[in-house]
Image (cartoon, rainbow, N blue to C red):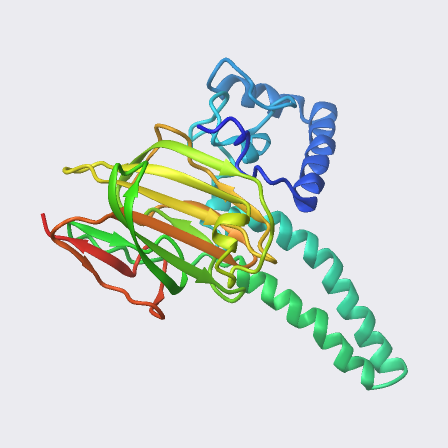
Length: 309
């Protein structure tokens, strides 16, 4: 794994810093009032090395480091696995809470002003209400039906295909390839899913600018993180999945670590608030592209390409 990827969100961010600060206060409370709980958590904790810069008291302390080796808990011993069943992306729960804590009181204030002074304040109150609705809509995590037919490559992201480009030689795939780029608007689901059943054998991360994802130069100038994956099933095709930030989407989240295996359509990360995702696949005889520029796709369920082995 790239040494720069020291957590699931290498770009950091204000919300991440707030959440880490909250974590420090939470650990202080647990040490003071929940010593029995901490003993139970310590007893069920697996691993012998702490990769975090803070004490790991329960699974919540590992949220940003699940892609690192070190401490862990089994699903049976983790009392917070219910959060994965929520209809929202777990990586975005903090943002939802933080934005809500500001927007909901602001909406209430404007409604009170509208009742006491002028009805015009009700129009102003709509702005934080609409923004709150968009935040909730953005972090939604709908279930997807993943096609089971062999040889399929599914979309790694929701959005619109805006580029299909042939590559004469790709250094990771070691041969000719095709790059398929998907633009995600702020109204799309931003969770990324694996295009095939694969094992991660490498990754790369590069800091960069935050240009609009609509601009072609954003593909190579913006911050990005990519995974190099190899198909689990023969003929074990190698592919690249690339997460790219946008003008609004400035935080890449990736849970994958080198050696991790995923099923087709399984979630591996997300990009927060509008972005771009690229998929590079081998160009070979028997490949059928199912999409074209302008095609709207859904992560995990829309078929991008089909290989006839």
